[in-house]
Length: 472
Image 1 (cartoon, one colour):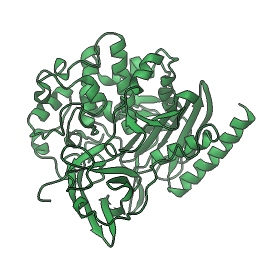
Image 2 (image 1 turned 60 degrees about the horizontal axis):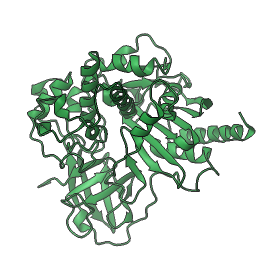
Image 3 (image 1 turned 180 degrees about the vertical axis):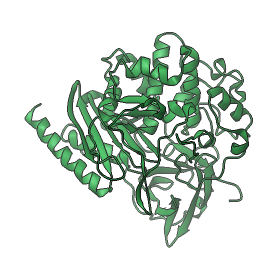
Image 4 (image 1 turned 90 degrees about the vertical axis):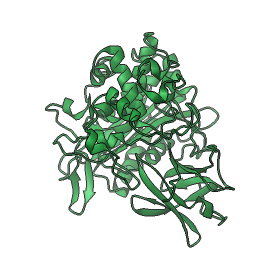
């Protein structure tokens, strides 16, 4: 390692210690890799509720939605084996799925969250903690009870999901390809495609085609695969008694969505496949994941779009950052990759609601100081307090069956959004979009365009779109 890289590593360790203290994290693990050289692989703090077990680079954490990148890899591998094409209609794999029967919904729409699905509630029905208790799946709004969930029973397979979608009254957000709105259920269907093609469980396919070839020995799909593994971070939640374990999310249908449990040393190997120098993914396949990203409604003036299981951000004229985060009860994670620098970063915490996107950008910005344009790697985008007070038409209630209700109100010259029972001020980058509590937002009109003159019909918040709720 060069003296410059050693100095960078030292500065980053100091940053990570500060981050751990600032956000009152029980523990944090980080790995940074350039080309085939690991610059940092380290842990900070502890991973148990008692604060006794030290975090290391080999501590295994749940990584939640970072798993979607692994699912996208499996689909790209299947395409390279000529088992499918990304342009194949969903009806080819799910002929019984009513909303896809016209053939317009394609595999690439599921990968980019542009199939048109509204926020669906089915992950709550499929959430089963290992001890048999059911638990909600980590929300930021006020969650209603999914209609008919108790009567219908748990979801186990993608075909079960198809039946449940057919039995629901869906108000699609638009035709396939029109709007991006994050859909966990879309990735459940992709996992079902993997199982149909390889005639095995998603967990087994992931193990054989990704985890083993990358020598990800400290990784597994699903908590039931952990066996007697040690150095395992317990997902934690704050309550009045302090930090308490909350268990892994054990729902096999949603393994393709968020079932990966991994160490940062393994996670950095996973995101590094975008270098195209492994048997898992060729350079051309890696480019296929990020070369045609789609716009994100909450970021109309941002340089960040969404590829296949990854966000794609233009840092400056010469560099892009490819990244994704994961959030669930007891889990916050981040992976990032700058292809031009062959730089890969992985970070994970066993606590929810940690601003991993902001911290991940901060790590990359500091590591590449002087190599990328100044202030090009900041998250969230810059925004300011409200200046124009003519925003009453934004007030109202927005939401979905998946994430619950979000209330927007105007109070003392401030526009406020309620998140997790706390009101936060919306800061504006333009008259209809900006940031709130680390999230990007934009108010939309009926046709899906930006809305600043008429009453908004939807709120785009990060990667999801929430319609205005009638009568709320």
